[in-house]
Amino acid sequence: MTVDRTLFKSGTILTLDAKVPNLATGDVLVQDGRVAAVGPALQAEDALVIDATGHIVMPGLVDAHHHMWLGVMRRMMPNVDDLFAYIDVVAEKLGRHYRPLDMYLSTKLTAAASLDAGITTIIDACHSSRSPEHTDAALDALEDSGIRALHMVGAAMDKKASAAHLPGDLQRLAYNWNKASSRVQVGLFGQLNLDWWKVARELEMRILTEFIGDLAKLGPEFAQPGVLGAHNIFNHCTRVPQETWKLLADAGVNITVNPRSDALFGFDDETFAYQLAVDHGMAPALGIDLDTAFGSDMFGEMHALFGQQRSAMRYRRFRGEAGTPAPISVEAVLQAATVNGARAAGLEGQIGTLTPGKQADIIMVRTSGVAVFPVTNAIGTIVQAVERADVDTVMVAGQLRKRGGQLIGVDVAKLDAEVTASRDYLIEASGYRTDLFNAAA
Image 1: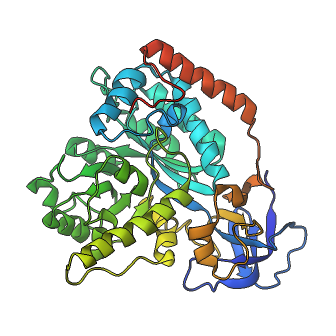
Image 2 (image 1 turned 90 degrees about the horizontal axis):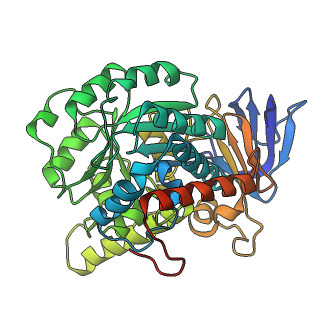
């Protein structure tokens, strides 16, 4: 739904911009896809007025790491704790049978679920770019969905997959998608392949690396000037040695962490990657990672980050460690789910705060639920109390994608049928067996 002007009226306003005051009761005016004004009692003739009474109006959430192509595999491996067992199923057994259609449907499903949950921007970590046609299908799904996305093109994980089209296909993709006005853009899921990094940098693309310290090391070549920088996104960053943290921090790379997924696989320890990034002066962002155990819910990630950081730091304190970092605050958690994610995507000048001039990526969250009212602290309410079902309205670049609790332009029943058919095809083609009541892993 597109309108020229929209006025969110009489809501509690969380701007997340230190220079734009929060308001107990105020308005947000959107014009031509951007935030035009934030303030009390704004006047706007001919605007669509959305009554925000009893709601919190704030920037959209940013999911800074999600393998959207796994959408049709939802909860297929809810108990998995072995990374290589996971790869065997999602890549070697099922992933190798993916058609472009399956890529499209998985990505479309994840995008729709994300918008429904108040996620307006997503970094799509695609380690299954099997062919240019598969990449095009994923990008078409993102464009059709209306979400804002940075799609990271990466080699498929299964051993028989060909990556012959990479990194050569990046030039075509950059030309087609990486315009200043593009809501959907493309980067490289390049791991530690410096030859691929060079191509991406020539195209001014961002580069994603999944990094688990005891499975990968950064050699001296990564310390060379210009190799690492703000164009890099390092995900997980668990069990990373201090000298590597210093290298990453000095270079100004972006760090993303996945609280629930990192715990699921046992990647992290009591040093806690999020906290180590903060200790080194960095501002880590939050990602959901995968649908094989979870789904598109940043509120779950915020809950997990708050609890895990406090648990890890208090364990270190009770163990007698000196100088243990302070317990995390709800303010820091919300920053990780918005502003820090925007920075990781290279979009901090466009989204992440309700700042006049920025893109109008806005969500409106109900506070009238029996589990939520009364609202005594707005940030605490978002981080600790509300759930995805409380997201009433979602706007991306000035266009409404959810209104009154309902997605706009999404035939959910049709999507359900298509996604189920895709899952059934993959199970049949692979010979993999699932059990409705007993998880294999």
